[in-house]
Amino acid sequence: MSEKPKESKMDRKEFMIKISLGIAAAGAATVAIPVVSALILPVLNDSPGAWRKVGLLKDFPLKSMQLISFTNADPVSYSGKTAQSAAWLHRKSADEFIAFAANCTHLGCPVRWEEGAQLFMCPCHGGVYYIDGTVAAGPPPKPLTRYKVRVSNDIVQIQTAPLPITGP
Amino acid sequence: MKKVFRNIWLWFDDRTKLSETMLPLIRHPVPPRKLWSYVFGSATLFCFILQLVTGVALSLLYQPSSNDAYDSLIFITNHAKFGNILRGIHYYGASGMIILVGLHMMRTYITASYKFPREMNWISGVFLLLFTIFMGFSGQLLRWDSNGVWSSVVAAEQLGRIPFFGKYLARLLLGGDTIGGHSLSRFYSYHVFIFPGLILLFIGFHIYLVFKNGISEPPKAGRPVDPKNYRAWYEKYLKENSVPFWPNAAWRDVILSGSIIILIVILAAVFGAPALSGPPDPSVVHTSPRPDWYMVPFFALFALMPHGIESVAMMIGPVITIVILLCIPFLSNYGERSPLKRPWAMFGVICVFIFVISLLVIGIQAPWSPDFNAKPLPLSAVRGDHADSAIINGTRLFYARGCEYCHTIHGFGGKNGPDLSLVGNRMTQNQIIIRVVNGGTNMPAFGNILSREDLNIITGFLAAQK
Image (cartoon, rainbow over the protein chains, first blue to last red):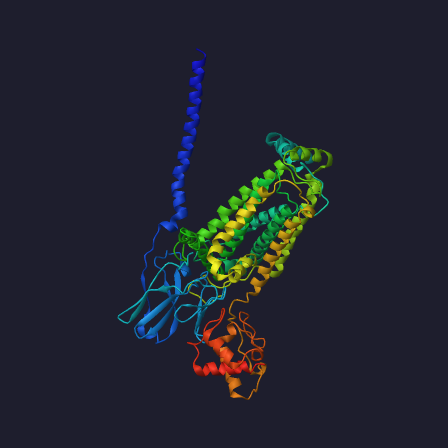
């Protein structure tokens, strides 16, 4: 007789432990959903490329290499200056443009076109590229990334793209 | 009056039991010290407290948004009263914390204090080291000048080298697929909430372990650690030798920490905060990003390591380093602690120290970077007939065609390529032509860039430099 109530008391205690821990876990889990979403939001949102006008055909003389800047695909109103990206636009022939990302493929530093040397040079670790974007010297593993360019009605447009990540 | 305050304190202490809890901690028995080597941990802690206080002060003046942060930095530096010194203290405090955390770790390794039963002290310390380095890095980003923007791009590129997840990790870091409005908010959250929170948590755990396991006794050759009876031995040792932590042992900690904080304030007052490098506009590419000094060894490593293994090294390197650090107490948690009996361990410490310092020194010089500020080569500096048009044109073209970005000649130009001041002594003009046209190890091929005429003038000029 004395055994039975004790056993049911134990069950009740175990049940309360389980339900209290369960409710605590459920509470934590429901909070975790919006918290984790905030943490990983940049991976959830995809911004499609947008075409941006960078100038008129006559602004780009034949064989020239010019620095162009344009607004990223989907900037928020508080981006300010950081909504801008840059690219090097080369007019190879009358109707052929090549746009190079300004990021070195080594570690992303800003490459600059040096007219005298006819080379792109990176200030960080000495990456050097030829006029066609291929690697001339230094550590870069790949040629400069290219953006899409199109010309319609004498307007030169560039397609925005994510920051070029070289990858493994 | 004195009696009133005393009574208030006695009532407060009775209800809170503060001295009952705190006094045994403050006066807990520790091994007697004769050296100044056990003070770096507490100095790191004081630097961290300094960082908390100055960080909170900076947050009163700082605008954590991609658009406004840089302007608020200009305000803090140039307009806010003592703002430049406040920024300076936070900067030198970060530098101090990184140096001290390094010294603390070296000392712990040299005296093998990580051995039984203090393995978890070491492991929590490894995490604190990593968090401290991340704080240094993220703090540099919050300056949100051009260096900050490009450093975050560099970090994203490094994460990008990780297989499968790299691209996503890079996006997570930047807050999007480019630098933008979300980037700085995230760095701010990492630097101000998430990592300080983790550091506080781990410092609490680290200090708890110091109390629980006791401060390690100064090592003595011929007195090895035996996990079977160390705890009993340590208790007996303390009973015979110990002194109370405060004030017998801690006066050194307080003097060093206090002096370091005064030194940091003096440095900040004399040298001020590090200069801002330009607005955070990713479309301004004419900038030369450089990390703060404590990140320079990494910067140098990326320039110097063989390019072929870089992707693997960038990913495996940190993993291996962290795994080795975490494994140290398990590789040898017993035996001799004295550095005199562990010559190979000491050799390892010296090697790591020399490696890091060498990377720092070479990274500050950065000879691999093109010299964008090279001055035009003056005719008066070169060898040969200064009235000869070939020499005059060669001198002009050597600068105009960009040779000086990488080559030094008569004291002018960069350090990436060989010094060409006396190149005529080791190469003929034909040999120079072959090298310039085809390029070489780490030299671009100029065959499609230079006209035949320019090539002849430049190489003729170089051959005359002897």
